[in-house]
Length: 265
Image (cartoon, rainbow, N blue to C red; front, side, top):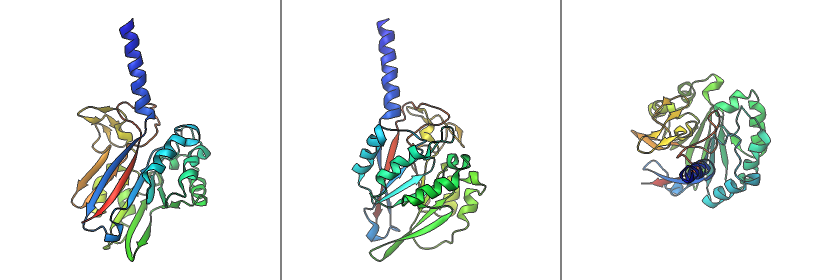
């Protein structure tokens, strides 16, 4: 009986850590295409909140975000969850961090699935968020530019490769916000520099030595679940995200925010 109780306690602790303890993952991207004035720029990525809460009024999550002291903030979709849609609750995080740094946002499949997408976008825009729906923005710093592209989730009817084909190839270092990592080859084919994705929830259950077990759009033992993937000159950052959706728990897969630092070679 004692061993059984110890096992139960261990499982409870594991589940608590796997679903409540927020990890900050730091990644550096080095490229001779990064303008020298952008060397050292820190980008905070937030993905797949899914209406989850971390402390009263998101105090634990906000504290973690503020500690990173970002220059830019990217939100890569599924800020809300279509199964328990509570826009005001999800916007609480945005309200508290919008003054820290410019925020750029793209939709995930759950925003599209609510059929309330225009309200979501308008609410974020009113808070001062840059909402990118298959659009680009140029950022200038000390006379040098980089480009940010935002890809709408393909649940809206436009495939990722079709959306990417709308943008002219140029010499600017290009950052892409796109919810779906399973289309990695499209980002490579269109020679994007750094892509920020989510959607895979880290594979939901991470197995030591094997990685994630299952992810939407990729099935069992998915290829892209967490960290950085590189091919040619394209790098894709996949966030494990913060919340859960259809599968309500994570195992060996704590929620995370990601800090990407640009390095000019």
